[in-house]
Length: 456
Ligand code: MV4
Image 1 (cartoon, rainbow, N blue to C red):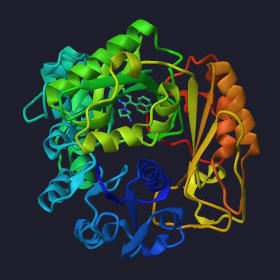
Image 2: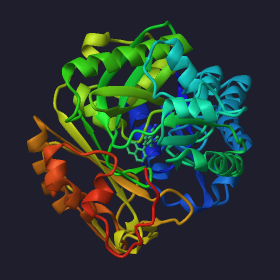
Image 3: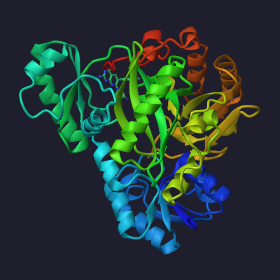
């Protein structure tokens, strides 16, 4: 096992890694930018090193600064968290070359799966269902191919993720212009203009399967997370199990995720994302990291995924098999609390937390790096806390969510907490019968903002 792990990240996920390290008897090294001196991950770690100024490019994305900090502190492994360098194959390779274990997938796996179109090709090879679409990145005239797929279709950027750079085409006449525009947009945003086309699913749910794959060829898949409630591709609420998934579909999705991981030689924890509509699921992409919403699965399965991830990186075998991984011990919901102003188009709302009361009691977990008196810097993601609520079944989990959200009191900054209560209390959410357009259709967030966001 490792003796010392450097955490190349900030915020609640850095706190999460430090907690796992402490329980495992591993020393932790925090790194921080000038803007993060007061963040809780600094105080909690065994050591802390400043790696540069506030902008991420000059600190949390500065590979050389991080590798130097790892060398100077004698760390033997580097945990990337999520975002930042977590899915950067070049960084994973640089870690290996400098003698540090990268706690994540091998660089080849990230390279293969990071590209959406390549991930789809792996899925096809693994006999995993995908949304009908063009075979590969588009290089020739696809007019006839798209006619066969049938309109409406969706153009996606191969290098994109999380829905960035998607465009709907409803009629053949718009195809060429939209292809050109999408390619230009993708080139500008991701440095790569490759695009592919899929049949548009009009009302899908986002359902994802957590997997864990060790370095000895063993793979397990957990129960699904439903992340359908999103706003502009930002997840708001994640829950498990999904109110839409039957035991049969669950098993099929788990088997598909395992086939995909085995076919691609994946190692690490990861997530296989699917769209689900009309009783059928379709692979969309792989996330080669431990995601924001991992605690939902930790609660439902009764497994410490962070500890598991570290053990896998250290070369351990999976300590349990598929039957154990698939256990559903309770229901769980995560609420992402962001420092944003719901009355002003969800603009980030950094500033000082004048007072803070966190919820507690049975079935309430809070993952956060903030505290009373802390000033949220303006440079980074606006996630300030995750509430993970668990209870025996969905109905009692929703009641407990409302109770916990009511206990949460943040003063001094605007947050999305109130909006979560509106979501949970909404009859459509209560019923569980919602799709991608839940937030728009219910008008839940229509206050002052223009509502100009394109579908899907
Ligand atoms: C789609 C889609 C409809 N048809 N693909 C992909 C990345 C994810 N963040 C959103 N993605 C979508 N891909 C096809 N062929 C609709 C979405 C989508 C979505 C899916 C599930 C839940 C919420 C969503 C919000 C916007 C778009």
